[in-house]
Length: 189
Image (tube, rainbow, N blue to C red; front, side, top):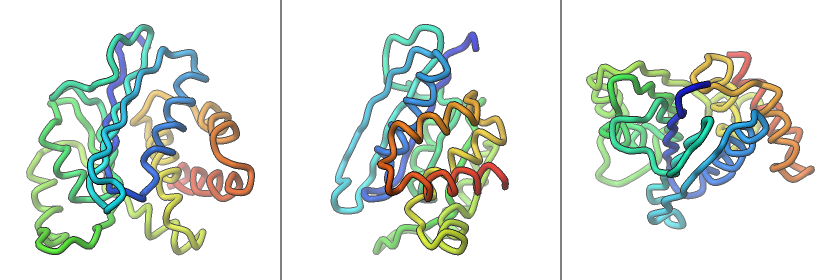
């Protein structure tokens, strides 16, 4: 990969964005890329916005993705995905979990989706939380589902084997099987 890959992760506190960041970092490192990342927490402990930036490639100087340069925005929640879409460039793809965090005064899901479609970005709206809850009885692993989906659809230049190696080194043993199942579930859809 000649060009540096720029990724923004966004969600709300408690959704597992830091674990997601660690798995992506390790996956890119396994592939031999120079990796830089940064976590921007916000009010994460209260269900507030959480954002993380990841850049990987041959040589990366800064962890921050500048406005308009994201290749992929991965949103764990639709409103947070919409907020980050304001930073999207022409080439940016949006991969967003079709999940709405209950927030008083927030626009309805339908309003958010309408605005997301108005961005005219390539939008992948996937039911990761629903799928994980229905098939694995645990929706928090939707993060691994989304990585699986992104890898399968080639939204990220990472190989399946690299993610599996990263999962084995990052995820505690007692949660490893569940996270691998979520990854495989997303990869298969």
